[in-house]
Length: 178
Image 1: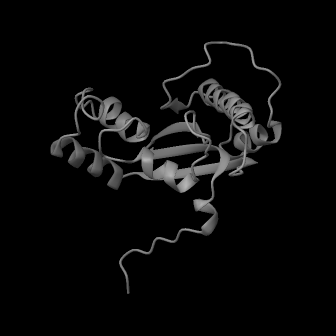
Image 2: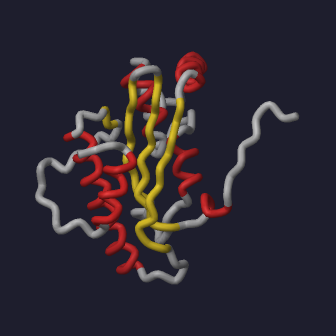
């Protein structure tokens, strides 16, 4: 019998506009990263599985925010690693040890379907809405005193009416937020 079995259901590979919350649990500490799919440079929206794996890459990347947070903010490895230079073998070992003793959960919420024939204008319109809810969820987590990995902040800017109020309710229920 196999030591591990990883099962990935088909919908994890579907491109769609999503809001997602990654919860990193290590001992008594929980950290949260909020993201959304919908590329800024191309007309695409990455599948949820690809976003999760990108966040945990151990190479120089702009997509591995969770890995970099562990390395730089939790383990206090040199900030240049993973940004200006590759992560060293020692840093990779330290992050691996940390992750081995952690749990990573990703909760994804479908916002809108993605279509290969979408216009650039429509794609940018949907992206604006996904960015809006992403910022709102970040603020809600922070107001609930959760440790948020995201660097970006709304800066107190007022929101337009939430484009996905039912998703806000679901996130609050799922993460026991006020």
